[in-house]
Length: 286
Ligand SMILES: C[S@@+](CC[C@H](N)C(=O)[O-])C[C@H]1O[C@@H](n2cnc3c(N)ncnc32)[C@H](O)[C@@H]1O
Image (cartoon, rainbow, N blue to C red; front, side, top):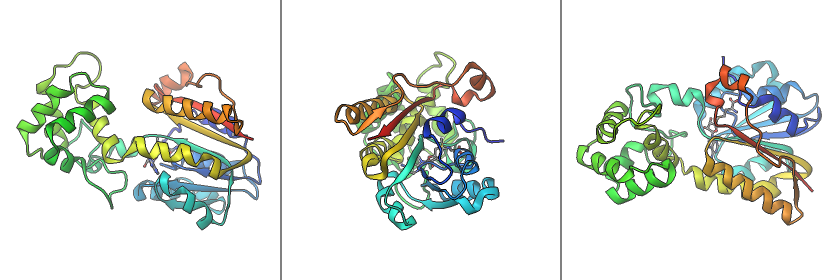
């Protein structure tokens, strides 16, 4: 069963009104979408995701409330077009639960997993863009090192990039994970390739740029009095959300509802270890 992260908290901060229009920018498997839809009467959830396979799963998982949900495939930077296409100008609430879903991480054919053999793909939308395989096989060593350092926050990035370049062509996820593991020894609980995979995933999907787009679009997408809830899993992302929310607050465009980020309870972490690093921040537009 799919457990949406910080679900009760997200629902509370969205302040769902039964007749409201909500935009779930990251429908994923439909976990949050379903809980929003459950609380609606005449309202609607616009459920967006860039991953067609995830949207199909979301459709099945939320079938019970199909009449209150419209699914759209697209990236954050296209949301300004998605809303008018759905027939709306602005929404009463926007939710973004960043990163990848459990389904994406664990399906070997998607190439995100360090533990199962698969193609080095890592594209959330498999119809466009460069794969992580193309990235590791054709990028300059310096570019690889910079990405792994910056996005993976991996101090041993140069060593890893050198090992990858020497081992080219990288043929599969396990090949890549093995190359990294041989280059840098395990220091703690994490598999030594975890941060490298995360960095490649962020580059392939342009996650930092996409988050910038999403945050910049907030005033355009959300009506006065509407709420914004963002759940992030990486400190670099949480920092961006915090700074953007603060600046909207300072400019008088919004009121920040969470002085500090909301984090999962011990019980949630026990039941769903993937929620461990989640941080939720919320905002109300003025
Ligand atoms: C953590 S999962 C969301 C899980 C979802 N809240 C649920 O309860 O099932 C993140 C989702 O966001 C999608 N995503 C990430 N970046 C995106 C972007 N820039 N535009 C659209 N979707 C994106 C991913 O494809 C993934 O399905």
